[in-house]
Image 1 (tube, rainbow, N blue to C red):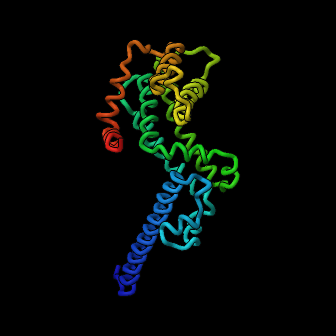
Image 2: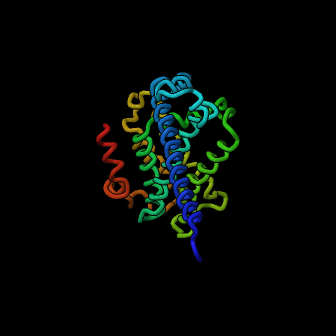
Image 3: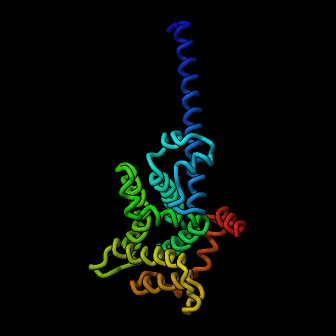
Length: 261
């Protein structure tokens, strides 16, 4: 089929428009990421009360209207920061799910990975607590709430699948009254609760807890032993699991954490 000059010009124009749109979209994404970076810093220093559209606009030297092109309010900004945090959990936990080892070893690896994420991004953990307040949730758009809910289900689903695999492999045979979801809830309450308590001003050493991380891990292992989740804790080297994460799966992340200390 003969290609006319107009056809050729239209193809060139289409190609040019696509490139222009892509460049524009990249600029939009870059500006949005800049808004998030600035908001994260303000939250870290001034808290949620100190976060405002005016302050963000002043910091990145743009109009407040430009910020509103991306976000309806500052609550949506916090929610987007938390969405990025949840995405990291999905990515990291999925890598642990693919970790070569028993299901119990993977559960222990999840604990170490959660610690790693909280230490790499301590402000993200705090922002998650901010976002969960009823005041902020009430101001989020339904689509935002739905997106967060779906992503959190993915995080929980990764861990629940490990537990279900333990059922299938006969590494864990719980009573009929205990479902994988109940086990998940119990384990997650220990992991999350331990991380939350570690952020308080309580002097745990004065209360006889020299290492809160070791205390949490000990309670997790006691729970798993109580469920008779094989292999039992005396046959598992938790230090080796952590070393595998440090040297292989998350080598770059642990190195970055070490350099930031």
